[in-house]
Length: 422
Ligand code: AMP
Ligand code: GLY
Image (cartoon, rainbow, N blue to C red; front, side):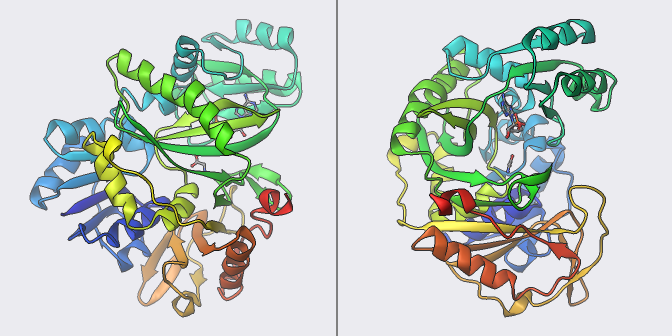
């Protein structure tokens, strides 16, 4: 079959890498793609936020299956447009993607199905929001309702910080995303990510992972999109996964179906674990980035079969065949990220690294200029390895990093520390 993947990050490189290994895949196109993706698939520079453009492209290229990577096209209704045109599509409708695109929507769903999550309130005016913050006290969490590219959440350790966040969001710093604000109880604990495929009725857990959001070693420095991840996440024990399925995920899927907006695609549940109990932090309507890199490394070719079963509504017929191993990815970013950074530095040494089912460098912000690979983004490479143990995967990933010659780049040296120290 001919397959189109939408997106251009490390997540989409990992999806393409896994899909390409499946014998069902004939032609693979990624739009818009990047320099690493171009080594294993065709890349097409189209506007992936425009449903009509994507549908026309699929018709012209005889595409049989569309996989939507990032949240922006999902929230823009690209999966709806593709399905309406009769295309088999992996990814939720815009109505279902509200589980990521609106924090207040997700909180309403949690209330409707009694899913454990932080206590909350919603506001459209600054004064009542500030009164609520003063009444609750710090620490407290202030969130813009809409999609804000990772900038919409302020975990405020002081009341002053929370009040400033209110002024900032209602002052228009995040545009329409901040027109409504959700204020939440601060949840203490350990965070982990849980990934579930659902066709709207059936649900299939496909793995756990832990990300590292801060830029610096020891979880210091500013928040980023994620500086490294590993799978599985030992903190999400079988018992906790069962509790999260029973109390959070399955009730959410049922509530979405009851409302006439069934959720189809991957549901990424961000969980906070404390005292042997998981609570929901947030949902995302897509694979995590860089969590997808470690999930795809462990799933390999079967990822396509699972996504097809999901899109075709027959998840009850498939199961996940896990290799009993671990994967770890380290993000290499341009110095300065997540603040301002320079573009165009050259990366050397990639061609000498192993690339097989246990070692892979996924590209995020790269481009090819003549024969050179250059950095064009903040997060640039995801150096990924598998091992029989997490320690083995970690050592293999850092051994690859040490062979990459990129003076303008940096990475954290402690990815995996939580699980490795347990
Ligand atoms: P979100 O975009 O909702 O995932 O929030 C981004 C990050 O903020 C999460 O991954 C958590 O680390 C943190 N966070 C969000 N909500 C809370 C909360 N209620 N309590 C503590 N930390 C939170
Ligand atoms: N790595 C976090 C995310 O994809 O949202």
